[in-house]
Every structure is written in C-alpha cells, then in structure tokens.
Amino acid sequence: MVEVSVRDGEMLERALRRFKKKWERAGVLRDVKNNAFYIKPSDEKRAMIKKTRRRLARLRTL
Image 1 (cartoon, helix red, strand yellow):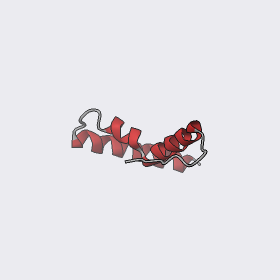
Image 2 (image 1 turned 180 degrees about the vertical axis):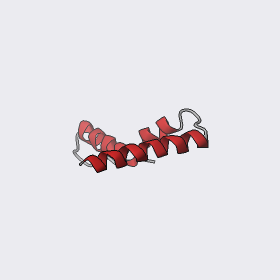
Image 3 (image 1 turned 90 degrees about the vertical axis):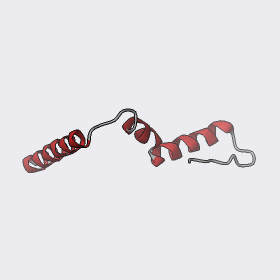
Image 4 (image 1 turned 45 degrees about the vertical axis):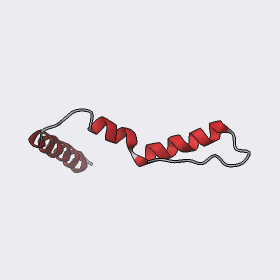
C-alpha cells in the first residue's frame, strides 16, 4: 500500500505528485493490468519465449 503523509506547510499538489511517483514505482497499475484477465500458463510461457527471442535478435544485430 502506498502512503504519503502531508508535511506541515506543504501544498496538496506537491504531496499528490509525491504520491503519484511512489504509486508508479510500486507498480500498482502494472499489477492491475496484469490481473485484469486470466492468461493461461502456456500462453504466458509462449509470450515470454517470443519476447526473449526478439530481444536476442535485436542484440545480435547491434
């Protein structure tokens, strides 16, 4: 859980900006998107292999 305490004399917009940064670093939105629907383990593995092959192909061309 992401939590930000507002300091004395701190503007609310600044505290909100700190909260947004912490929220992004914690990966909350990424987790929500990943859990939005079920992906079969075989499909997940297939996508991971495809991603790895693309990455390796790109590294070989450099």
